[in-house]
Length: 552
Ligand SMILES: Cc1cc2nc3c(=O)[nH]c(=O)nc-3n(C[C@H](O)[C@H](O)[C@H](O)COP(=O)(O)OP(=O)(O)OC[C@H]3O[C@@H](n4cnc5c(N)ncnc54)[C@H](O)[C@@H]3O)c2cc1C
Image (cartoon, rainbow, N blue to C red):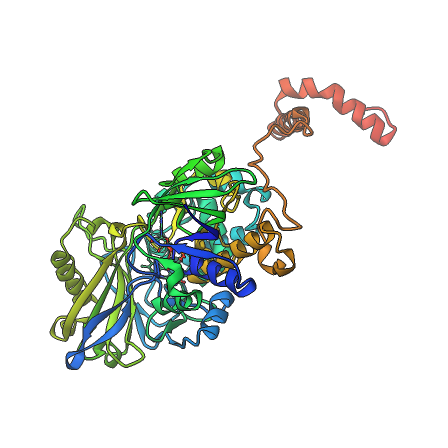
């Protein structure tokens, strides 16, 4: 059986970062990366699409945007000499929210768009965002249940929360679209606590959805994001990366070697194993000894989002000439029950070479349609927003249905269903000789490429620690690790009986309030029967207060 110091499973950004970090710190380590697909990059994929003048250009069908607060990713891009360019943002944006009507606005989000939306709607947007931010600011990403509102937040979905606070259909639609665009998920399926933690990890809800300021959609990568993994694989050494090597079984033990069995039946051995794969894929791996209860429950209840991403290339960026930015957000609902229009959101995707295009996401309900049907529906929907030029200037349509992608199960990120956030606390926990990386395990910008980089570095430093190479450990990246010096076990959900608060306190308070209420009413309406009952009390209080006898 072939033997290695470290085997990393998954040649996405997290796995390749972990392998590179290990080799950078200790070049003598024998490291192998195993990847199930026939390519590196995982949830990043850059493809050639036909563009104007019979040429092709590179477009991202997976991870694409970079935000200015995504420090880990920005540092890596700098190291790999990969350049960025601004997301085009000038012009009016279009929204279909709360009604079939399309409304345009020029603020960064409809939240600030008084004029196109009624004042009532704008107040509702602002109120909801403010409330969500206030809640997410209270969350400690390392310990969600240390917040006193955590139990209640985990018991409800984002949709039930939205129903309880949003006063208008437009505000509910806006939140639904946000959920679909950020997680590829329906708000009714996600734990509110997970959503708040995710917002906290990226900064705020606005940071997740905005293309301006600290928003996650501020920049794009020249030449596409898959370059990151291609360059990382080159740095690791392509001979150390084995493609078409899906791992199906892991045997591990305390202090002993860890063995992996590939789909082909081949077995390999290592001192430490890093699983840099999405949680839903961890759930498909057979572990011996089995995973602990919390981790098992986590993998059973972390569901991948569902995104179909599309790119439409055009002869010209006609929307720019018409004063539009190319940005659409749409609930896709009409007055016909059951009808759904495809586009959830879109952006200008004109490349750094100037090839005009629109990129966007398609509603998951269109999953079972054929590519042709989706293409027709998308172009028709673009005509609804941009006019007939969206058809006349059409060149090509390309899409990626991530739910059909092997070794991913869905995209862009796995999320936690209501009632399971206690299990989420175990996401970074080791299982004997196995370490867990991947963007879902990150603390900052979890779910994004930046989170993937951070998680890879954390796992690599854990491995160095476990291999007794402690002088090589960078403690900055050990935050959240069980090996970290300030590690503490996250609080469990605190729905315990609180015996320190006596129920009598409440009973006495309400009893007094009731008696006082009856007294006040009997005085006001001169009720002789109750007045008689209170008279001795009145006399006693009068005497005690004034020192005189009750006047007859
Ligand atoms: C459509 C879409 C849009 C996105 N947009 C953005 C964006 O704009 N900005 C942003 O920052 N992020 C975005 N993301 C998310 C971003 O792409 C991911 O956060 C990041 O790429 C995750 O990297 P990772 O290494 O953690 O996981 P992955 O990229 O999923 O890598 C895991 C690897 O493990 C492999 N694997 C899985 N199971 C096994 C197994 N059993 N054996 C062997 N190999 C296995 C997989 O094939 C995969 O290559 C988007 C993602 C998608 C899909």
